[in-house]
Length: 330
Length: 228
Image (cartoon, rainbow over all chains, first blue to last red; front, side, top):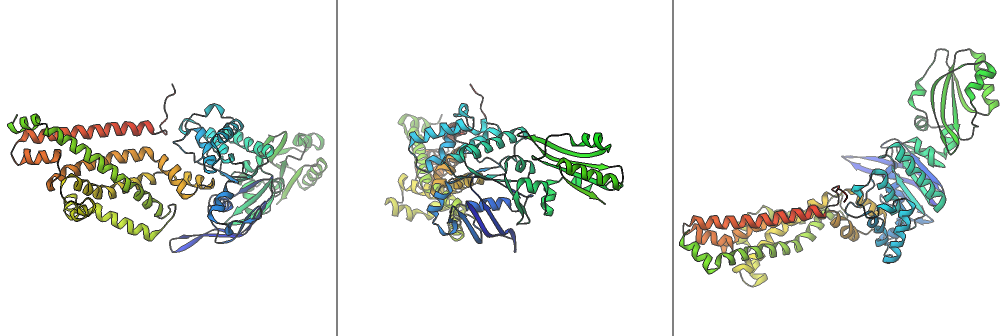
């Protein structure tokens, strides 16, 4: 378990200082895939670096499995870091080493005997699906392959935690989803607790079970992904979850619905049922839904052309169908 | 061909001169690196944002390096004669010249090393730290190997500079091509000897340059190469 208690971090800047983290409290349970989302400059990168003490907070505590990181020696800290793997947006591979030697690197640092280390390297490359690229150099790999090497390297010393700092932000959508499913697999099959830092809601949606939304150096909201996703409470969470487009839409008579699919609602054609059963035609103005593991996630926004009556009827209909929705009448 | 040049070639003195220039250059560069490489690493590591920022140490080291770097070699040589005497027991001859060359080249080399290390992306160092690497391990296993191609190019440039210093050292008693050019060429008005010396120095520079660069290129894995 990782506990962050009252973290404060400021950086000097010119003659003033910049606050990166302020009063941050978080608990990350073992086995979670924990997402931390925020806009650029919100402090999320600083936050993740505090977890392995690459950045030291000015005050507050970072407790990893009951050990307060500020209380241990440098040597002890280095040992703890081997239990916390980390991957980065820019991969940070050693360019002059082969794939194999990159994965071997943390094992060298941990002074693992050569033969045993080599066996572990082969095993890891198997896990990330790069056994055939053993002898290649990073410059010969694609972005996705580089991130796979980085993941293998981060997992070499059997860490209990894996920190992912914008790990998919430099990748195209297809590669992103393949890396995300690899992370999922690592979480479920190897039992590694994963902490994902990102600015993309999509990443959170597809892998995380819990999410913390960070804004202006503070934690604005924490909760289960499905909960935060369907009913964001803080302004920043709303901003991240619901695209600007929807929020700015106003229709003449002002009856607007937002349906939320968070994997719970059944896969039935709600809108056509509304039309067929109630004779109400919805005017779809925004839809962003996708199937993940056979469940539907996303939003659908529609307006009504009828009046108040129709509005109430639609609400009743949605309730009957068990669809999560937010209605607005302005 | 002047009579002096014929004599130089027949007596083999020209070739001894070439040999002297080559060994003094290589030995001085080598010792220069033994001193300059750790110094460069220290300059890099103690700098702001380095592995172990120590502003005061960095300022002092940087200041000392700058003093030696800003002094023209010809003056530095004369000024450092007592130091050479202290180290090798004599202020004249090639042994003393090697000391001079090292004193002049080590600070230069340290700056070359520092700038090579600065090319390494901070993210790689961060990654190594996240894997539990100590500062020493980062220097040995990350910084130096990753900077290797750039360090080799730096070594080529440094060695050519030392070669130039080596020729200058003949003004206070060093032997080699520089001495031949001045004593037999300039002083005795034998233009052909001067040009012969220039030619051989040019050949030596070319060899260092070509081999060094080829090695740097071969060792650099960042360049995408065609698969066979």
